[in-house]
Structures are given as C-alpha cells and as structure tokens.
Image (cartoon, rainbow, N blue to C red):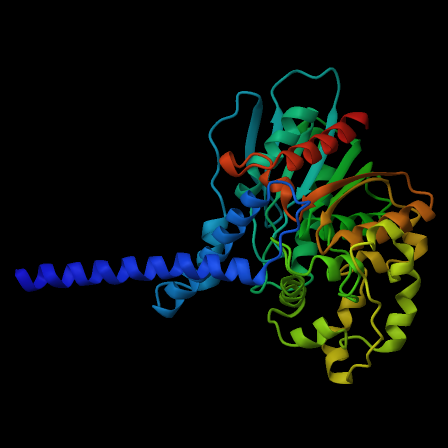
Length: 410
C-alpha cells in the first residue's frame, strides 16, 4: 500500500515537473523567437495569447511522443471551439450543401424584404479552424448587420490538399446561391467573405464566379487579412513582421506547402525565394512588385532581394502556386475588372499585409470600388479575438464593426 502511494506521488511529481518545464519552455520560446513591436494593440495580451498557442503545440507534441494522440489532432481539438447556446436574436441551423457542412444564422427580427446573404470562410492556414471556432464572429456579423450568414466547414490539410478547400467553398457558395430565397436572402445581395486562409478562398471563389452566368452576380467581397500569393515571401510586410505573433513568416510558408502538398518539403526553398524560376517572377512582377506598395509601408525597413534561380524539381512540385485559384493575386486583368465591390482589411503588424495592399491596387486600377480599413496597431488574427474574455482586443472589435458598417451600406 505504501509502495503504491509512493509510486502515485512520484508520478504526480513527474507530471508537475513536466508541466512547469512546459510553461517555462513556452515562455522562453515566446520571448526568444517572437517580436512584439511597441505599436501593437495590447502587447501583453498578445504575448499571453501567443504563449497559449505555443504551449498547446508543445503539449500536443508531448502527447504524440507518449502515443496518446497526434500533435495535429490535439491542436485542432484545442482550437476547435464549441457551439454556443441559443441566441435570442438568431435562428441557427446546421445543414449540408452537397457533402459540405454549413451553419446558417438568421436574424429573428422581422424584415420588410429579403436580406443580405453573407458567406463566411474561416481562417486557420487551411489546416485549422471550424464553424464552432468562428461562432462568435459569425453571430456578431449576423446580429449587427441583420444579414443571413452562412459559415462553411471546408476540408482541412494535410489530409485534404489543394484544391479540396477551394472546391468545398465553391460548392457551398453555388448551392447557397441557388437556394438563397429559401433562407430569406435576396440572390442579388450575396456577399462572399473570409479571413486569412478563408480570405484566400473567398477571393478565389469570387474570381471563379465571374464566369458563371447561370448564377446570380456576387454583390460584394470582404477580404480580411487574406493570403493571396505564394510567389514572394520577401515583400516589405514579410520582412518587417517575420517574427510578429501570431503568424510568423516561416509558418506562413509552412501553411501554403501543407495546403498544396500535404507536407513541408521545399520549405527552405520557399523561404529563400528559390522555389520559382526567375522568368516566372518577372512575369508576375507587374502585380507583385514592392514598387506598387506605398512608401509609408516601407519605413520600418525593406531590402529588395535579388531573384534566385530554382531547380526544375522544385518548380515542378510547386508550380500550382501560380494558379489563380491558389494565388488570386495572379488572376488576369480580364477577371479582376469583373469583380464586385470589395472591402479589404489589413493589419500593420502582419506578414500578409502587402498581399492585400497589392490586391487592393489591382482592384482599384481595374475600376473596382474598394473600401479599405487598416488597423495600424493590429496583428494577424485580431478579428477573431474581438470578444475573447480578458484576452479581447479593442482594435479587433473596431475592425469588425467596420465590416458590419460596410455590410449595412450594401
């Protein structure tokens, strides 16, 4: 009996020690590998949020080593969120469009006519995220803009690679367009939106739909700090914010590779810029050049990189990076000029800032009306943290309110 008790105490001590090491290691990793600029909204809160994310990943790795679960599965579980209770202002229903799970949010308040319909594609690097994780965001948009919102649960990488996520979002969108009136939505007032990886999918779906005369014309698109290209990872925002949480430059390259191939091979090639032939880079320079970015976004430092040649093996493996469905920034002018009125949100301390700025310029040069909101103290992912208890960020709430105001104006 005494031996069993002593063994139990020893096991408990080991777990406590492991937990302490995990906490200390997480804090050390965060401070040694990340950089939080002075201008960021609530820097201490951001440090805590980032430490929690790192701690989750580290704990997942420990559990994987113990053979209890995979790191990816554990991290997804911790980030997945949960379905909230009933909302007095909304009707909510889970459906499937084709094989794609969706959740529809409909305002309870009576409407004189059919409402706007907003499709929302969640972020998460094409690997994480879910309907539940974005429940708070979608409820807020539906309530405050009095729109019908449909959140889409697309398949995730690495189990499902490109173009599975894009195809799921396209399927859900076309099904919703064809049945919009069943949900009290005006088919002529459908808006496609998304953040981060979801912003990539929203932009790609919008481009595809310009060549679909059998469907209603998309009324507007809302792109929230979207990833729009995988050709140049040395734009000013990538250089300036390479170590700013919660999205590092290296992590963004990792995500695009997982989305494309389901693994991170050729990561170093992507980071050093040797994953695309020089002639390909020159071909897209007119749309990707840092010269198209305002000088005010280069004052924190920018050094142009000399193009590096790549091997045929690397290019053959990654050439789908050049497809507009993967990199919407590379779409032809004939497609871009047909796109609907757009809202673009950017954050100053975000590696993806310049993707959105370059797309904004392309849209404006093509005569597309653009409403732009820049969070000058924002970081990647801030919108999702607008209502996160003690770890909420006022700048995220302000950004989301600007999105709601844009919707109300449509």
